[in-house]
Length: 287
Image (cartoon, rainbow, N blue to C red; front, side, top):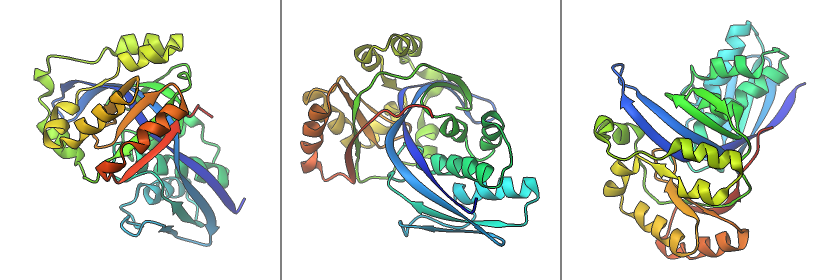
């Protein structure tokens, strides 16, 4: 196999709780993760040697700083393969958005290189390698609906969440993950999202209950710093969203709707905010 095309889906957090700040500086998390039908496309082509990359977004680095390049390098070097690979990335997922865009690209390259070069690594073995690239990479290999714990790498598969229409809205601001976690008073949080109740809602296939139990403690940092996040949430709720919340460390906001028609109308009503990205999508299932 000399060429392979892969889909790299974005993720949202249906619930995100931070339990505590650890002595090593990381945070213990408890999150419900969900992939959505907003994705990047990656085309891998075998080459004689080296790892090269191109992308439709000129602002994205295509050298060793990119997780896709790091992923290819990790597997090829480990396997002692002298051949190389060219990575062509068609970027659709907004960058620095809390949607795991970089992590999902890295995950797709791990899966693709494993298949293209016949390395024979299992999904679990790829996930073990993925955590070396980033905490979200193992989940992006797993996909679907899952509980993530630890720093995000301890995963428990959950049943597929019920179908939903999802509005994705990213304001034209960049939020640093380091800024969010650096300003989070994790050990002083008074309220925590009911993650266990949300797990039960997923198991019951109850979309309304999933929406009722949504919560993201990182909003305690981002909403005061970026009020537009609250305005997007308010607009989506006024237009009939079952729930609206920031994904990850932001700034992207998503809203859950029962029908695509409702979601489309809500997305159109965000036009006056002049957002960087607004689209309507849905949940994607595990392959």
